Length: 499
Ligand code: BES
Ligand code: MN
Ligand code: ZN
Image 1 (tube, rainbow, N blue to C red):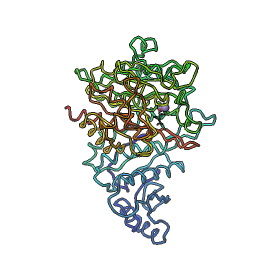
Image 2: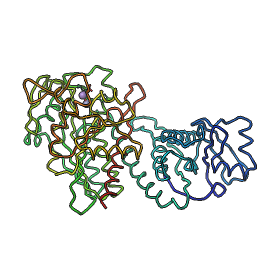
Image 3: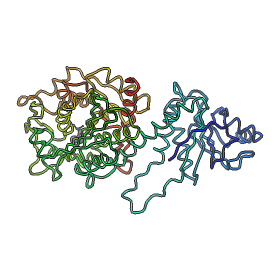
Image 4: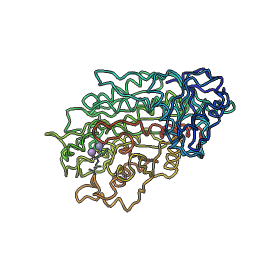
């Protein structure tokens, strides 16, 4: 969809539909007030009849409102009159765009930007409007024989006061580029694992390298990984007919020498659990076990679109976790790239095994910070549900910067402790440590495992098992594109503090 900014009032709009908000107490927002005035109390009369209560998310189309140059007005309920919470604002945008999509509207002008949102400015509202509108219209029909009809809505104009236009234009450009990355990540994540194999992921990365001149891509094959000694990663891939790939994507948005941000992604294209096989129900949704990888690619694409003056390295460990005659078995011991030995007690704790070698590999880029993104534990879904990404880090300033970026763009994370006490749960009588830490604090012990491979750099771990995709089973399954917005806001903030 195309988004534009505009400072003209309602009487000057020539559009298929003008969108305005209304509160429960029949209080009108400024644009609604103006419509009421020029239409000689059309809205007040309508409200008197009780046709519209202003309940949060309620919508009503009005046709041929007198004195307007636009044929329709969409009233959107905004609840009780007060500064809205961020989540309420998003709900209101979502409902309005869904309503527009039910009738064949091509363009609309929204005045919902005049709603007060707690602690947020116009730039924030612009970013959220773009993100939520695109989310509302998203459709993945690549594998439907009958395609869904394309949304008719092509252009959305956001009403913004004149003095804010400049700041909002920057925000709009950022939002559009971030959305480009989110869309890419969702589409890639939604492709099923019979097509989206490690090889497919590598091909997608190569395509990015062809599309953007400052992105270069290098693929390490199994043989090269074996020579290097990436035995933890290869142990996961052993049961699969699909060869593993280590996908290295480098974005150079600046000619200045700059220690890169390394983004390490979990790319398990399907997670059966391996010999520690998952039950059938728990396996549905496991095509999304490559969301970390899709996030790395989507973020780098968005950074390239936005031409961020940064050096970013993406390292994706791409494997398929399968049982098979040559698969790794519980109690097998492997030597990781770092030299540390691991007793694999559960082959379903495979994410940490591929990530640990990718983390060690990232050292060669001499990164300023390393952030890994992984659908790592079911435990994080129990702890935080679908609203917050789990964040664990060995460097407080990095953790803080990521948490703040998440709040800013409304793609939030919540920090869990990485205390030494938890490390004891990984003890093994036979190897340096094992790959599982028992029932308690599963998300933390998984991060504890990774922390043993992150001693040489500032590192943060994002456990996105609850946020990157909804995996309720049945028809309610979809990728969200998270945490691309969080990472993009973090990267944007880095460019601001560095100048
Ligand atoms: N990919 C899963 C984590 C997961 C679970 C993601 C549910 C999304 C939804 C991961 O590889 C896994 O299987 N983790 C195990 C770890 C356990 C064996 C220590 C888990 O969480 O059960
Ligand atoms: Mn697993
Ligand atoms: Zn997994």
